[in-house]
Length: 220
Image 1: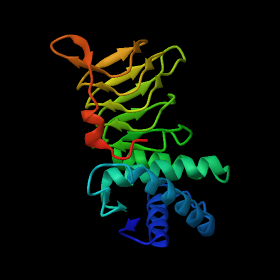
Image 2 (image 1 turned 45 degrees about the horizontal axis):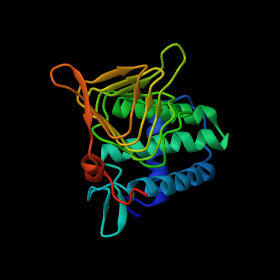
Image 3 (image 1 turned 135 degrees about the vertical axis):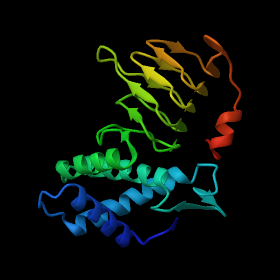
């Protein structure tokens, strides 16, 4: 992967942000943190390698620029989740989650398991709860995935959330489903290959693969 900064420079940069935002005096183990960053970069590379945009993938290589805020938001999610999964430092995972929320208004807890391959676009104002996610997820700004009465959605492969859309409760979402801008569905079953739109009321129609193919390549 082509990086704007070396892994160690990236680790120092992120540690500096954590210390600036959360000046509690608690030390960060630099060696362990550098190791977590390297694991995170492997996850980030795998994710970005499937995104059909030249700022993420071009000339057969994934790319990561820490000053591309959507990319950095994805990296921070992976970092918080990697540290959580390691069991090393839950407080540090919490800080990185909070840092991501402060920088990008992105609310996705460190213990939420997003899929390996997803694309966060514009990202601000988005809340992703502990649903059952699948690969080739697209989430734009101001989207919500959340629970109702303790039940979260189950989402199939290739789910596209347009700006301002929401998915709430015991929803069963098939493969290749797209929610149009501003759509909210609650406790609903949605079959494969469905587009849900507001035009003018909530309605469903057949969905092609065009949207997914515009966002991702190598979707095996």
